[in-house]
Image 1: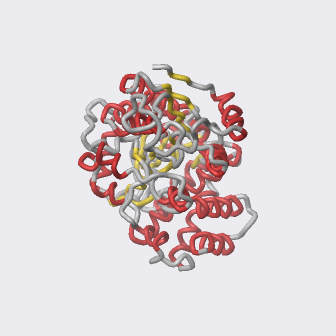
Image 2: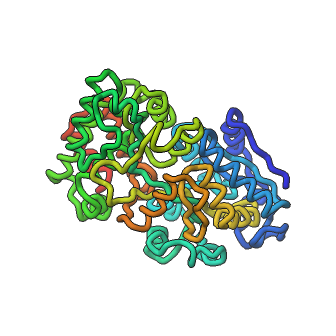
Image 3: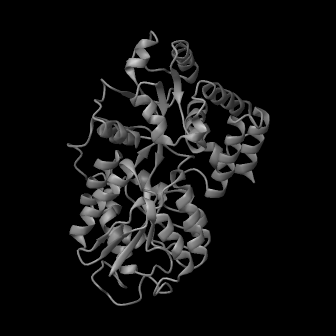
Length: 433
């Protein structure tokens, strides 16, 4: 296996250079070309895998997946197309330029769900329903997940590599105890949580750490889940919940209150920085998806002693769902390589290696979880026993354009550039057009 791993420092420049070049054979479809050993037809000499997994547990997960790919497809060269920056925003911007100039990578990472709709509408990705069945996912993936992945026309457009949960609180028990609180306490509602945040603030520590705008949207979605319940939250995206209602106003007021307890340097931080404040004992609580679990493990912290976790208050019965997945772009220059990569992503071996390193759980239900972390095992159990709701911040609930508008509105609101009434109006306009 010739495995090419570009360093984070140069990958963006290499990818940008690709905008000026047309990949050899980029007009070939997934069934054309010569078969060089991939699982499907077409050129399988290499595969450029485009992601935003350039650092931390995300890169560790990608590296673990590549190791399995090396074993399963030794004749296909792996090209690391990772682009760092902005929790994927830099990668998505560059990807859109490449797709618009007919220079697609062989496969690219995307969140399963509504985020894919723009690519589908633009005819930029292929239906992979046949591969989904060929790789054994039809029987191995829970039906609820298959339903979420399937479009109205019955097609599936990506292969899921994992399942993440967005509505998790991570906390430092030492900081909590220092504020005179019970470090084992959980809270039934956002209202019940607020006095604890106030106690931490009175103790001189940051009550709730957040980072830049997308992490604030992650917090916002969990408040909406908590205050509206699963049906009301889902209704925000299917039209059955009125964005202008008093219930939504109340939820946005709770979000405003929570933001008043956050760190003032938030807009200059990404999620690892906000999580590090919990690890370092500078903050008590942090709301982040369960990829944060890997950050605690990387620093040899013990679950239940050095840190604790629980669902965001009021969301114990909900699982904020997102899934990293991989696509088959229309005109992929090495379609055989694309399908080789997708087959590894779908395999039990690939999913086990990737998810152990990344802190998520496999999309397949037939992967042995006995040597996964305590958190991952509990998340897998919750995934089968709670109501699955789509994450807003991570592409499952709304198309990219809608999420961008919501993120802009949130950033204006949390920076003081708009008031709550304007924020609610802009959220409604973003979703309803």
